[in-house]
Amino acid sequence: MALTDKLVSTVTESQVWKSIFRHGMPDTPRNQALAVLSNVFLHLHPIKARKSGIKLQYTWCMGGISFFLFLELAVTGILLMFYYRPTAEYAYMDIEALGDHVPIGIMRELHRWGAHLMVLAVWLHMFRVFLTGSYKPPREFNWAVGVILLTLTLLLSFTGYLLPWDQLAIWAITVGSNMARATPFLGHEGPGASLLMLGDIPLVHAGDDARFGLIAGRAVGEAALLRFYVLHCIAIPFVVMILISIHFWRVRKDGGISGPL
Amino acid sequence: MVEAAKAIVTFLTQPEWLITLSGIAMALFFWKRDQLVHPRVMLPVALASTLFFVLSCLNDNFRAIVTKPDNIPIVLLLVFVGFLFWLAMYQAVENDKRIANGLPPQEAADEPAKVTVWPNLVYTEMICIILMTVGLVIWSVFIKAPLEEPADPSDSPNPSKAPWYFLGLQEMLVYFDPWLAGVVFPGLIIVGLVAIPFIDRNPKGSGYYTFAERKFAISVFCFGFLVLWVLMVMLGTFLRGPNWNFFGPYEHWDVHKLVPLTNVNLSEYIYVKWMGQQLPESILVREGPGFVLIGLYFLALPPLMAKTFFKNFLRDLGFIRYNLMAFLFLFMLFLPIKMVLRWTMNLKYIVAIPEWFFNI
Ligand code: HEM
Image (cartoon, rainbow over all chains, first blue to last red; front, side, top):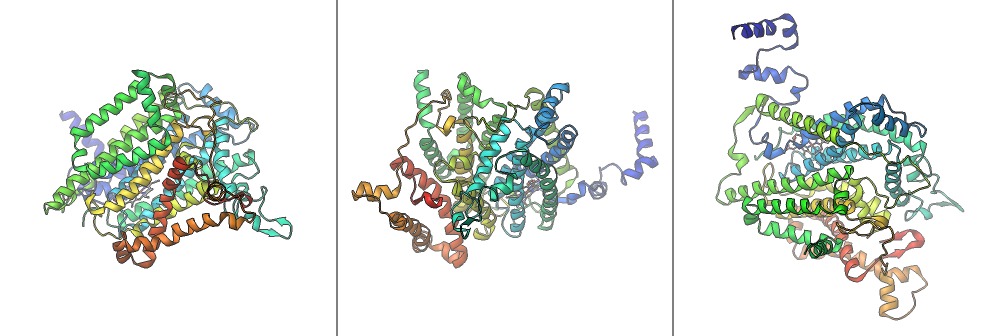
C-alpha cells in the first residue's frame, strides 16, 4: 500500500505530470472546479450545474450521445477515406476490399451503424427538448440552430448513402433526388416551371433544374458521386462543426441546461 | 389459430387501420394517462409487445424484414421511442400531480441545489461513452455492413426505396404528388419546427416535464412526430414492398401482387358522377370546385376557428402569430385528411392539372 501511494505521488508530483494537469486529484471542490476549467474539452461545461438538469431521466443524455456519435463518425470516416476513391471505377471495389482484405475490419460497420444511430439520437434529442419545453425563451434561437443541425444530419447521412456505389446506393439516391425534379418553378416537372419561358425556349429543363444542380447530371452518375463525396466528407461536416460550437455556446449562454424557473 | 392471429395482424397493419388506430391509441393514452402510465399497466404492455415480436420472428417473412441489417436501427427506433415517450409521460404525470397539490414540479424540488459537474455530470457522460462504444463495437463485429451488387443505372430494383429516414416522405407520395410530398412538405416541416418557439407562447412548462399545462402543444407535436413521422417510417420500411404495395408483416413480397387502382379525381366526382356530364374543357372550370375547397380550407377556416374553439389562441397570440400557427396546423392536418379521403372515397386529387404538374 505504502508503495503504491509512493508511486502515485511520485508520478503526480513529477514535472511532466504537472505540466499537463495543473491541479491535484479532483477530490476537493477546488480541484473539481479546476479539473473542468483547465481542460479544453471539459470546459465546455460549467463548473456547477442544476441538479435536475443533469439527471439522466431529464436529458436522456441524447444531445451528448448525438455529439459523441458525430465524433465517432468523424474518426471512422477519416480512416475510411484512406482506402476509398470516389470514382465509378474504384468506389465499389474499394468498399468491397475493405470487407475482404482486412481481418475483423469493422471501420465500415462502425461508420454505418453509428450513422444510423446518430439520426436516431438527434430525433430523440429533439423530442426530449420539446417535451421539457426547453425551446421556450430564452432558448428559441438554440432550438432553431438545432433544427438546422437536424437537417444537416439527415443530409450527411443522405450524401454518405451514395458512396458504396452499389445498387442500394444509387437507387436510394435516385428516388430521393427525383423529388427535386418537382420543385415548384425550379424543377422541370414542377408546377410553374413551364411558365418560365424565353420565347419558345424553356428556361427550366432536365439539363439545368434543381435536380441537375443536386446530382450534377441528368442521372445519378460519377459527377454525383464526386459531388456527394465532397459534401459528405468536407462541406457538411465543416458546417455542422461550426453549428455545434454555436449550439453548445448557446446552451451555456442561455443559462445552462433548462430547468424550472 | 395461428393463421387467424396472422390474418388479424395483417388486417390491422393495413395503412388505414394502422394509422387510424395509432392515432386513437395516442389520444386514449393522453386522456387516461394517470392510470395508463403506471408500470402496472405499461410493463405488461411492453412484455406483450416483446412476446408478439418474438413469436412473429418464427415467421420467415417477418424475420427476414426485421433482421435485415439496415432495418435493425428502425426496430431500435421503435423500442427507444416507446420507452422514452413513456418515461417522459410518467414524469409529466407525476409533476402534474405535484402541481395540482400546490407543489413545484420535481425538477424544481431539486433546486436550488447546484452540484459540481465533476464528477456528477462528467461521470455520467463517461459511462454513456463507454456503453455506446461497447455497444457499437459488438454490433459491428456481429453484423456486417451490407454491400449489394455494383451500381447499375439500367437495372432498377423493385421496390426502390429512399434512405429509411425519408420513408415517411416517400409514404406521402401515395397521397400527394412529389412537389408536395418531396419539396413543400419537408420545407414546411423545417419552417414549422423553427417557428414552434415563436407560436407557442405558453410561458408554463418550461424546463420540466408536464402534460396538463401544455395539452395542445404536446398533443400536436406528438401526433406529428410519433404518428406522421415515426410510424410512417415504420410503415414504409416494414410494410411496403414491390411497387410500393402494402404487404402484411407475414406476407411474402410478391412482385406480381396486383392492386387495382381505382382512384378518382374530385372533378370527375363532381362533373361525371354527380352531375352526369362530361368534364368541362376549360381547366379552370374543371378544377374550380377543387380550388374553392382548398381556398376555403386555408383561408376561411382560420377565422372560423378563431371564432369558435381557437378563441383564446387569437387573443393570446395576436393576428400574425395566430395565422401562422393556423396555417402550419392546417397544413399538417392536410395529410391525415387526404388519407381519410383516399381510404373512404378513393379520392385521388382535389385539384388535378397534370398539364401544369399541379396536382393537390
Ligand atoms: C447534431 C445534432 C445535435 C447535437 C450534437 C446537440 C447537442 C446538444 C447537447 C449536448 C445539449 C445539452 C443538453 C442535452 O444533452 O440534452 C443540447 C441542448 C439543446 N439542444 Fe441540441 N443537439 C443537436 C441537435 C438539436 C436539435 C435537432 C434540436 C431541436 C430541434 C436541438 C435543440 C436543443 C436545445 C433547445 C437545447 C437546450 C436544452 C436545454 O437547455 O434543456 N438540438 N444539444
